[in-house]
Image 1 (cartoon, rainbow, N blue to C red):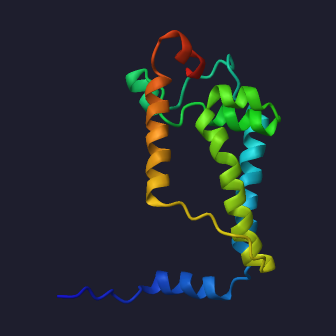
Image 2 (image 1 turned 120 degrees about the horizontal axis):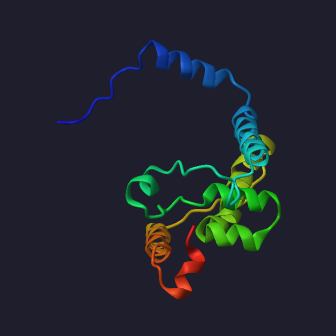
Length: 154
C-alpha cells in the first residue's frame, strides 16, 4: 500500500499561487525585517540583570532550573551591544551558534537574490547529534551549584 498525498485545499492553493508569483527577494527581506524587529525589541526592553521583570520561562517558573534557552535574549542583547564576554556569560551555546546561523542565512539569501554560489552548510547527523549533546551537557552544567559551573548560571 502506497501513500497518495491528497490534493491541496483552497487555502493551500492560494498560498502556493502567492508563493509562485512572489519575487525571489521577498523571503530574505522578510527574515531581515523579523531580525530588525528582534534587534528593536531587545534595544527597547534592555533585558539585563536586575531589570525587575519576573522570568517568562515556563521551565524556570515551574522547576527553578534554567532551560536550554534561558539567557538567550540577554545574550542577543549583549551581542547587539558588541559585548561578547557578557553575551557568552548569559548563553555560551547561542554565542557559538550565531556565526554559523549568520553564514547559513548569507549563503541562502545570497544564492536566492544575487545567485551567489557560496558553499552551503550541510551538517551531518553526527554533527547535529554532537551539538545537541553539547547543548544538553551545557544545560545540566549550568544548573549545578558547584564553583566552576556557577559562571554559566543565569
